[in-house]
Amino acid sequence: MLWYKAWLETRWRFIVGLVLLTCFGAAVVLTHPLMENMQVEIPNLPGSLGESVREAFALMTTYRGYVWSQWFAKNLLQFWTLFAVLLGVGGFAAEAQRGTALWTLSLPVTRRRLLGVRAGVGAAELLLLALVPSLLVAALSPLVGQSYPLGEALAYSLMMFIGGMFFYGLALLLSTAFGDQLKPILAAMAVSIAMGLLSLFSKRLADYSVYSVMSGQKYFNEGAPPWAGLAVCVALAAAMFYASLRVLERRDF
Image (cartoon, rainbow, N blue to C red; front, side):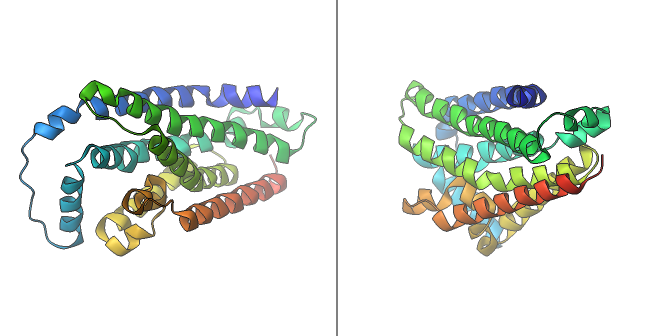
């Protein structure tokens, strides 16, 4: 019953996310011939921003670089992070607004169990949001005369999911701490945007960013997963989930 209840609460956010990400993934593959034949003059920008722009254009010269830069490091990264936040918020904050929180808390289960089930359902949905569109990218690649290894698509999807648990854990914590849904969304998105801007303007910070872990940048460049970064993201997500439990157990509805 609890698992089904959590699914009902999140199903439309998940379905919308799956449809959007699937469409974006297909668009990345199908527009590759246009991008390949497009003649673009590389702007001569100064500093780290110019270096990032030149690196982005250099990646587009191979199909592997194109898929990684346009999908795993861009479209999937951005929209998956958004839906990690959207699936993380809600729960008791939403029920408190609707006036149904007391009914849920009256069920013969602990608050720890209630939050654990909801977090588990959201995590499963996020895993599918990372896997399904990425595997579709690999499956559609022959349509444009290219091939992309399913193993690489799977590896990048798992790194996206594991690293992105940082944002999911943050959204769960904020949603448990605040009494509405808007504040957690705005706060979590502000954190994600700030981290993205810092990474954009500082090459040194970009190498240690959660986005670098989520996109599998080290795996792309060196062929080795960012084990240390993944471990840090998991540890932070676990810490925020534990903090969410503590807040929820002490909160008076």
